[in-house]
Length: 380
Image 1 (cartoon, one colour):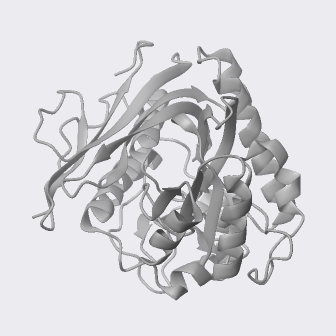
Image 2 (cartoon, rainbow, N blue to C red; image 1 turned 180 degrees about the vertical axis):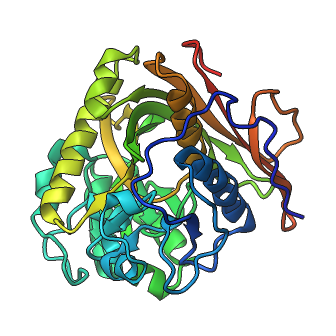
């Protein structure tokens, strides 16, 4: 059973943003494998976004019918053109010139002499990203995977990640080539061919979220942290984000209270995004989210680097949309705190939470997902 519950309605004094055009707010699912709870999240938050924009909500995209789309996947130029999407104002998400640009793969270059790369690969990008990312490689063959891991093992443990996995799934940290082979034995050949990212693993690591969203003439930027939870099956997956949200772009975050590591992380994101835009000029997005890791390498040196990007509706998007709502309703508020929370255990729900999923997920049990926002300068 799927339950979508809004335990806190939109603010009574909410205002709507300017309407640049009329099409209805419409979820766009290009991957039929998306779970019911992910679809429920987009449905619930899409309705709130429609109210914020003063538009109708359409639950399903129809062929040939325009819309303000909320894609669950970053779109290619061809997919965007089919829906009449021509710029960032037409969607809550992003558009890339080739599909691989939306994956983890663009965060690293190829290992020297790499046997394969997708058509359109920007070979100079890996070096241009520099210290904005961790030491690592993107590989597409068994031989390159083994070579890349062997090289990085000289510097410490190595994290291997399937290019298209999400939420912490499809990963393994290895400390030897035999451990790599054990993980490799669990994979299909086409998973390797689709791409694997290998990078230096950091210990005592914290995952940061840095992002910005532009909707209906309103812009927000944020810095925050993520946490993980374990499913009843024992898998460690995304469990939510805590964000400090400011009006405007990333530069405006310098005017709000943030932890010491935040400014380095924001600068790395700005460099990362600039290099991606230069390497792939067909890219544009209204929702831009970046995961970074901060921790220590095997020698005890502190490191920070961008892990991946998200130019689509993502795990932090419910917090982003509630923040947009609150800031639109209260022009005097310069910044606020927002969070998303996902749990596989029975627990009470705060009175001020917006619950966007509460139901059974297959045989795993109950999954609860909600978001909250606070404008008093305290974390909710």
